[in-house]
Image 1: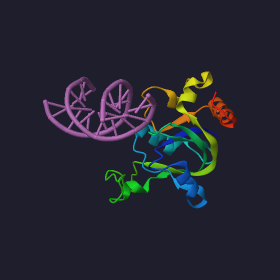
Image 2: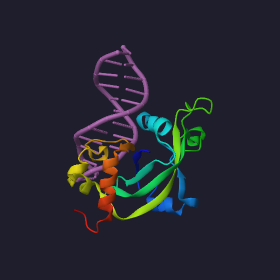
Image 3: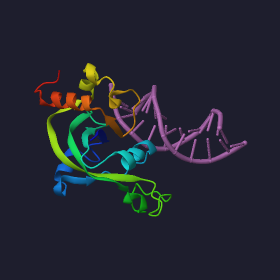
Image 4: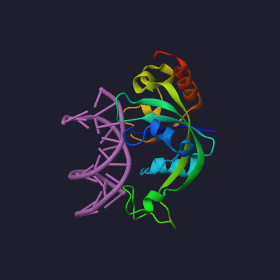
Length: 158
DNA sequence: GCCAACGTTGGC
DNA sequence: GCCAACGTTGGC
């Protein structure tokens, strides 16, 4: 079992929007970056755990946990000319883009902000904390996963 | 709103 | 295959 961090802009799709979905499940569609695509297609499996991260907002940070309930399959928004994620170079025969389905596990009682992550010595190497990181999907180590969960149980940021 | 970092595109 | 130009991401 592996751990991941998925970024989402809350104005586009927040953890509360996920909570309102039927069965609290959503397609993680619209990823149009090859590195992230490869993870969606090849590495992210059913049962993997995901930190839900709010980006491009104040403050950015991890707001909860979701679980992968369906492994990589072709992203159908790429086939839809009406979609803003439409990509004519992706076909059903040869799909270029992939998505997974995730289900909400829980929303944290408080946000673990990017600032708090950066201040935590054990989390110095988290990819999301690295300067210039733009990947919307990144792997999280088991140790990082546990550290974040421990922080989430504290009432106050450290 | 600014801008650094980074990915993609396309001319050559 | 190089690399300048351009577009996007996302923290601040």
